[in-house]
Image 1: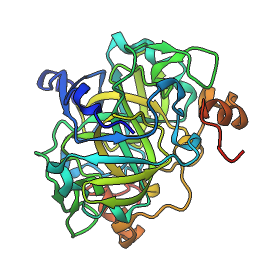
Image 2: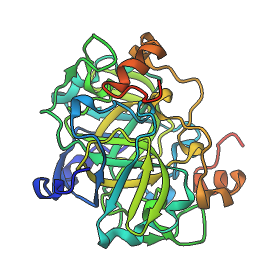
Image 3: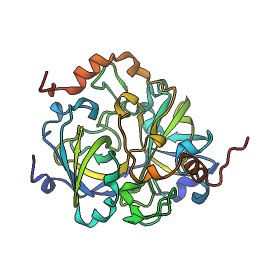
Length: 173
Length: 173
């Protein structure tokens, strides 16, 4: 294995915005913590025109990863209490936004492409969030067998559903 | 929905390296295209000491996302021919590394934590790759029902297995 890769590699990288998410969520404290807790919330992803060619054939995929910058994250914390549990964990063992590099991703449902805009559902992303990348969701690449989920094993599904929605209970319940 | 979020949001973001991946792969053309095509390849992820506290409780998770910078990607291409098919697609409809923001992620198996180092398996990542983030893999957040995978539907699983391994056939076959 290589031992001197660090000497040739920059320590910092500049990322450029490729678009923005337009969603109904304007309050971080009232935004669901994950797409699965959103009850279908629709949003519009506006890709900057110079990147539109990169969207070709994306509409064939029912689900996509949106990779974005948590622009309203607080300064990074190395240990923190995640939203689903009252115990502190290392930030890399959580999905919290207050990370050394505040990169987030969400699997959302792609409803329709309208030129350089994507209509998506199951969105847990704040309005105005800068987008960094889009990738297709491909179960044969991303699913795993025999998964253990550490401290999350202690969080009952019912509690996760209730806490994860935050101020967004299902309207029809 | 907000209409003026762009005016308050920077167009560029600086990401800092949090560690490096040490793997047996030194040739991009001979590196498997996805973790599922690696036949278990082991690697060591060295986290910079100042971020070690962020790893607390990560060892409870059997699988983690490594989010990294494709440091040997070619300049971004908006359309390209992915490794699994001989047809051009928009880059955002592929997992290719030559992206406007060359961010990659892999789901790898966490074998063991040794202080600020992680021993991982199922690695498709080049030696020396700069790491940006780690997140726990949590099926209840990330699995979806009724997924369609666009152009990938045309790629038979057998062909994907053969092409995806590239120069890494299973040693025991």
